[in-house]
Each structure stands twice: as structure tokens, then as C-alpha cells.
Length: 124
Image 1 (cartoon, one colour):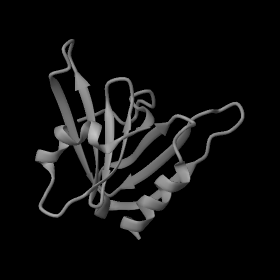
Image 2: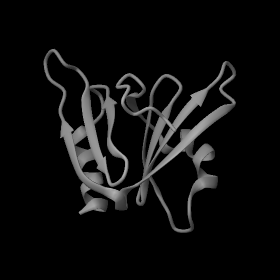
Image 3: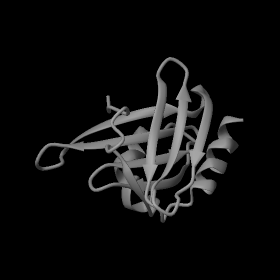
Image 4: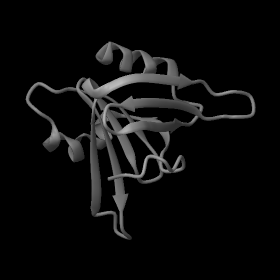
């Protein structure tokens, strides 16, 4: 599983869902829809209407990938932090039952309020 305590694991920027859809499509259950995608240098995160899928690309070739599925139904609380003047990263914290807090850091170009609204839509 991905070490979510390491804040530098994901520094995410918005990307087109189609860019990563082929890698996560086989993991989706019938009727599950891809909503948004964000990429780091090699890693990426996909938000669906049922979960967050965090993908950690490993190894020199990048052929090995760790897929971590985080069901939105297990989110007990969440928090967003907008980017500031000196702190250019925005953050999303999700508190999962049985797992604890998971933090995703987004570059300033990501609309963190829209991400928070997306989470709220499927959690509340």
C-alpha cells in the first residue's frame, strides 16, 4: 500500500481522465464512472463516483504499479486547504474508517474547492 504519511508522494496537477482511464478501467465495477484525474511526476489519482484510486508507479520501467482503492463510503470527515501566497500547494485530507487520514497535495492549478465539492457530493 502507498505510504500516505509521506506528503511528497503526491504533488498533483489536473489531467484529462482519458489519459489514465486505460490503466484503471479494468478495476471499475459495473456502473462506476471516472470523474476527475490528477497526475504527479509518475503517480496519479483518479476520483470516481465510488472511490479514490491512488496509483503509485514503481520501478525503473514503470511497469509495476500499486493501485490503492479508497472507498468514499468509508470517509468519516474531510478537509480542504486552499493555496496561499507563499504556500502554493492546496491539500485534501480524507479521514477513513479503519485507515486514518490520507492527504493529497495539489499544485496551485488544481481547483481544490471543486475537488471538495466532488467529495462532498459522494460522502454526505
